[in-house]
Image (tube, rainbow, N blue to C red):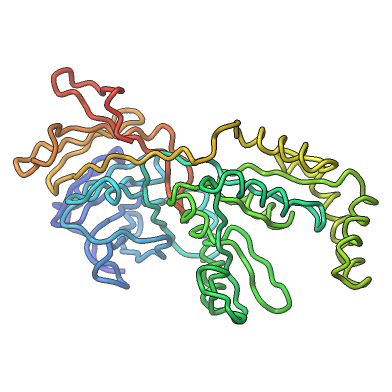
Length: 399
């Protein structure tokens, strides 16, 4: 809380798009609230801070800030998008780090505000280009989903990757942090779960296990397609999240065949087998009738089922590596201006100091945005603007 801001700084915001800057701070008006972005964060002087001025009460609010916070820059610009998120463009940065989204009214924010009972905003890093949708594969124990996933990894070794799960249990002999699991303190993991940073989690024998949003994003950042091998309840949690994925359920030809396969493994006691069968019956009922999954594959013949799985994933003969696209990095100067036209942001880098590229105007296409806090915002496309025609040149796409 604090005194009302000076009129010379905030000005009279009528349409929610106008902004005025004061040093390293930018003000954006959304309804009765003014979001002031810039300056040092409350927790770290090296990160961009956010505070809110409520015009109706005349008071300052320090919101709960979620997500990965961007590092402080010497200058930035900002523009409101659809009334629920603010695009922040950092100056003196390249295109791998200059686009950030501050969510102020998205469904994720609404959910978090109900959880905290407080004002919440969330950062999401903007990423040029897109990635293949992650794959969620579920099915009862013994159905063969592990074998199918192994066949994918062997045939397409550079296309797929697993997210590394988190757990609160202690590491076992030879287990390495970040490779077998992310070993976490319970208080830290519980806090991250509360902050919406986990796609799914469960308590097993007194320990927490879960899949974080960041673990999936890291696989995508490496240019690979993430595979999530989780149970039906976990798949339900992922479906309710912001992750845009393909959901596949692997089913046995019959319950009797599933029992036969479980017993053929000869690795478990009768009590353990009966427990797995009870769980399998419940999973089969939910997986086949809930509408949760996009595809249901019956594993009556392994090779046939595998070929059907590849068809669903768009894998053709001869494609063995991921279709990676590496965006060309563009350096943006401190001094630049932005304007919004429909779903595009025009970035004018006409300052004299800007000499690292032959072009000084770009268009950022936001029409294919996907994802968002607490993960990345992907689907941004950056184009060169032809200065002679003042039009976007689609042939000069940089991502």
